[in-house]
Amino acid sequence: MFIRQVSIKSMACNLSGRRFLAIAALMTCFLAISCSPSGPADIGDNQPPADPGAPVHGGHLRVALEGETNNWLPGRGNHVAPAALTVAMALFDPLVRLDHQGRFQPYLAESLVPNGNFDQWTLTLRPGVLFHDGTPLNAEAIKWNFDNLHKRQGSVTFGSIRDVERVEVVDELSVVYFLTKEIVPFPDMLTRAVGWPVSPTAVQRYGDEAGLYPVGTGPFELVSWRRDDALELKRNERYWREGLPYLDSITFRPLPDEDARLASLMSDDMDVIQTLRQHVVARLREMSGIHLYEQIGNSSGSAIFNVQRAPVDDVRIRQALAWSLDPEVLIEVLGGRGISPVQTQYFNENSVWYSPTAAAAWPQRDQAKARELLQQYVNDPQRSDGKAIGEAVAIELMCLPEQSLIDLAQMYQALWAAVGFEVRLRQVEQATQIQSAISGDYMVTCWRSSNEQDPYIIFTNDFGPVDVQPLNYTNFTHPVIQQNLEILQLAPEFEARYAAVEQIMLLLAEQVPNTWTGSTPAAVAANPRVRNISDWTFPDGRPGDGMPVAQVSWAQVWMLDDAALAAERAGQNTDN
Image (cartoon, rainbow, N blue to C red; front, side, top):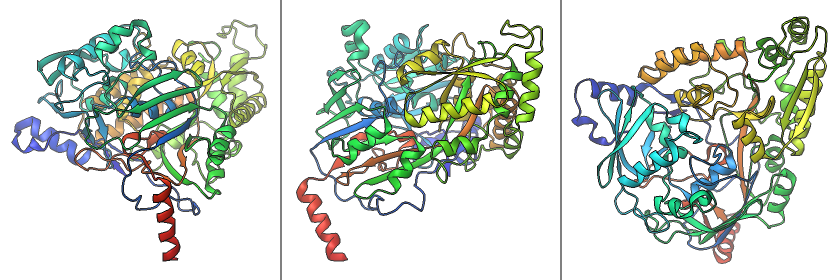
């Protein structure tokens, strides 16, 4: 279990009054989430060694990803898919990251400290950090990023920081984030794109094309990007973490076809592949000659509904679509039996946020109930799709052209058709799917929902005001969510926060802005010479949070050369 807490410097003992008590409460009892950093017990002989050996410098790593990204500039790019997140860990450094216990810890930042009301947060940077182009990372750069990339209309991240009013420079390395209200879990906002600083010099130089030429502080810097072909990176020789990165270079290639990606590893065309598909994980578990890393968190397969598009703007239709489904059948189609447990809410059964009450309330496996709701809509003279009474209800499902997802879409189609829906399938590539979800150009789409962030951040992003939150892909909002977000925003006590989360999930079980299938297995498979895929650490040696959604910290990955690999195998043979 991960216990997520607001991280502060060890100077907490110098604090007093309300500020100390609130922080003490945070450090002991609240913001707890669950994650499963280790793989299942039934993996065969392809488990990575418990001791990866001594780090080795050098080598060129080839990585196959599940998809391409549209733009690499934070605030403009759609950095939500696992492929984008894992590449981002090579190009950028988050200001804040999570440790192995799920606690917020400064990473690129040296410290992040709240005032007594949690509406002002002082961030201090590490000294001497440079962007890839030699521009210093300083307080002015942080303010410039905030003002020009994030706090502007049209930014993908604008809605996520709508409660951050401004950033003010204190001195060369310190800024203060001024919030419009108290937000206890504010550090979580700086773990994703809002907290990935880029060079102001580079963005101003490249202008509208800045997303093609990312310049961060990360362990690797851009050599070239050929969209839909390859992203070539080289070692950042001025990286702020001494001795890192270990690798000389990385090539990232998008290979959306799961079979092609798997074949690229087995043929030695690629050294590392990522997958979040159950049937591929099942195949990888049976293979030898590789190292397999797995991690299951809160992310789950789902179908999301655009509630501004008829007929799924009507709750009866959404409920009918949910009641039609059998998640175990959908998991079976995905090849996930024994891999993905059924999910009924934003948090899996191992999470302390999981609610048995919400699980029992989730609509599923009742086609008679689905038909009843569908007929209510069909016979309604005011039905939202504008059709006449008695006419069939048409649904369009958008999904990706990957074989397991084609099979999944066809099973959705069959289950929905069985109760009387007419279902049309639409295939698009992942980058198009994400952009369509942001712009609202869809009715229903297969999706992955939830993650390892704090519930306040998750629900603020997913159900924030439509006019300012582009990450609200369903366009669903509700007063009950907003009321309970206020509790999650302010309350340090776990019990109060749990009750608020449960109320939101009970509402979602009633209003159904999305459906659920099963927990998503995040897996990375690698050539045995590749080491340390998941065991990254902070500068002080503190363990990190592994590889959630197959997001790898590339700075601390290394490759054994032929001699080192041969010596290791010789030693294993001697031991046997």
